[in-house]
Image (cartoon, rainbow, N blue to C red; front, side, top):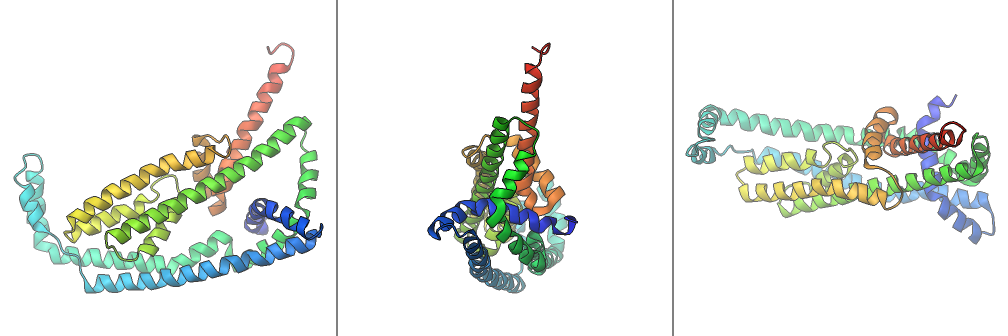
Length: 331
């Protein structure tokens, strides 16, 4: 029965949990009228999201079109002079000579392949970008279903949570500790993942703008989305940019983008664990494995659910180990 609502329910629970402090504050201001407070927040969620999403979507679409037009007017050029210079080096000389002899004769073909490949990539991103966003929310119908569930989860969530927790066959103190751990872990993962993705996307966009690369907003947004993945991440955006700059003989900017991109990717390994661990005792391994497995099992909501589940499982195993150690004969 719940299977068709799983995506909407998961997003609704996460949003209700994150918006619970706002709901409690607004309910106090409204003198305890929980239904009115929940209704106001439920209405504000799509209203707050609509403006930025529409503005960003328009900018994204325009820059994709500009990038395709630029690629059509400015074909990539293969620089054979660099390979001729590299032929004088003992280690790279033979390889550079082979590349120059084989690639320069087909440079027109190479340019055509690069341009057509880049155009196909941008057109694919433009065509599937909307589907990706809708897929993250579970289609428009699921989005409104999520809003419907969000109202009741905000209004009655505390009572439902209390009943569910009382059913857990565990010592009351450990139930409280487990509930606190779930809350702290969820906030930590959301805070750490979102802040890391936003920072990486912003830095990549700034790097693109400094290097004079087209469509900084498009690639900054793409880097922010890919930064949620623990493998590859923003490097899937800046590495092709380095190749593009090198292929157009902009070697200074190519080196700059290489250094800038490597700095951004290295910062990911520092920022994510630091931001998450500053909010809750979540191990880096739980975040890494949880994000990969969570996305595979639950979709984009798995970015949050995966690490939380692994942390809860680790806590339950620790509780079990403590219980067994306290039994006679297990000292």
